Length: 434
Ligand SMILES: Cc1cc2nc3c(=O)[nH]c(=O)nc-3n(C[C@H](O)[C@H](O)[C@H](O)COP(=O)(O)OP(=O)(O)OC[C@H]3O[C@@H](n4cnc5c(N)ncnc54)[C@H](O)[C@@H]3O)c2cc1C
Image 1 (spheres, rainbow, N blue to C red):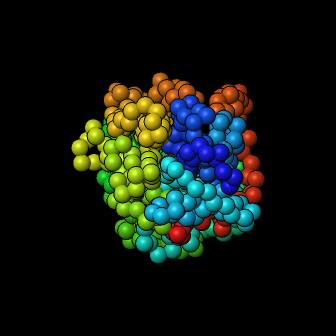
Image 2 (tube, protein in one colour; image 1 turned 90 degrees about the vertical axis):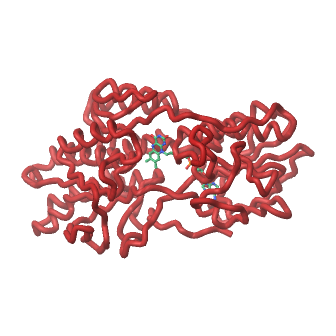
Image 3 (cartoon, rainbow, N blue to C red; image 1 turned 180 degrees about the vertical axis):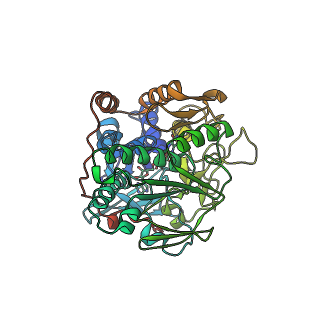
C-alpha cells in the first residue's frame, strides 16, 4: 500500500458494527491529521439482526447489506481478509485479496474489530451436516433450503422421506435460534398453502436447548412470551435436551430419540473470529484482553472491541460485555475517541454502557421486548422492533421499508435461487490464521 504522506496511519480490521462506527467517528475526529484504512472481508456492513427475516423470505439479502465504500467517506477501504498481524516488532497487517493477491501495510494505531464466527461443539457429524447462521450466505442458503425441502417433499413417493424433509431442527434457543425458528416456521406455513399435496403433512419445527427455557440469557418475561407464541404456532420447544450425534438424514437426541431430518440449523452461539487465535496477544474466553479504554495492555498501539474483544463491563464489575450489536456500536464510537486521544485529539474515556434491553422479533405482529426494562409483547412490541431496526440501520432503510410495505400488500415472493450450495457455507471455519 502507498505511503500515508507522513500522516499517522490508523488501520481498522473488520467493518461490522464496531469497525464501521469506529471508522465513521474517526473520520470526523482526525480529518486531515491521520490516514484511516479500513480492511474488511466483504464490501458491505451486514445488519445481522434482520437476517432471520432474510431466511424467512421477507427481506431481500442485499437490502440488509450496506455498501462500505459509499458509506465510509474520507477512509481508504481495502477489500481483503487479514491473515497476519505483526503486533510486536514491525507493526504490519497482511491481507489476502478475494482473487488471490495479497497486500500489507504498516500501522501507527491498529483497531481490531473482526467480530465472531459460529461456535462448534465436539458432536460427531455436526460440522458435516449442520449449517450455521452468522453470514448473509447462510441466511440466503437457509431460505432456499427450506423452500427446496418442501418442494421435494411434495413429490416424494416415500412417506418417510416426506416426513424427514418436512422436519426442521433449530439448535440453540437464544435470540438467533428463537427468531430463526419463528421466521422459518412462518415461511413453511406460507409455502405449504400453495402445495396441495402437503396439506395433510405435518410440518415439524423443533427448537432445542440444554437450558431450562428459551431465551435463557434474557429477561424471563421475554422467554414466557416467546414460548407462548412459538407453542401456539406448533413449534416443539425442547428444553433441557441436546443433540448427541448427527448423520446424513438423522439426528440423535440426548433423550435417546432419533429424528429423521435433512435440516439442522446450528444457533448455539458464537466465538471470536479465528484471526484472534493467530495474533501474539493475550485472550480470555477466546476474546482479546483489553482494558476499559479498549486498549490492549501489552501493545500500546493496538485497540480492540466488539465481539472479538473482552471489554470489561464497568457496570457489572468483574464481568465482560456481551457479544451484542448494542455494545459493538457504542464501543466502536468510543474506541475511535480513545484512538484520536492517543494522537492528541481529545481525552480518552473508559467504555461504560448499561444494557438498554433486548428486542426479539417473532414474526407477523409478534415480538418479545424489554426496552428500558419494560416488558412488551404483541403488535406494539413488533412495531417498536421494526422502528428500532430502521433507526439503527446504517443505510438501505428505504429498501427494507419497501420490502415490509410490499409484504403487507401482496404475499412475499418466495423462490429458491439455489445459487448457494451447502458446501459453500460450512459450519466449521476453524482455521486460525497466523
Ligand atoms: C442472527 C443474529 C442476530 C442478531 N441480533 C442482534 C440483535 O438483535 N441485537 C444485538 O444487540 N445483537 C444482535 N446480534 C449480535 C450482533 O450482530 C453482534 O454482536 C455484532 O455483529 C458484533 O459486532 P462486531 O463489529 O464485533 O462484529 P461483526 O458485526 O460481525 O463485524 C465483523 C467484521 O469483520 C470482518 N472480518 C472478520 N474477519 C476478518 C479478517 N480476518 N479480515 C478482514 N475482515 C474481517 C467481517 O467480514 C465483518 O464485516 C445478532 C447476531 C446474529 C448472528
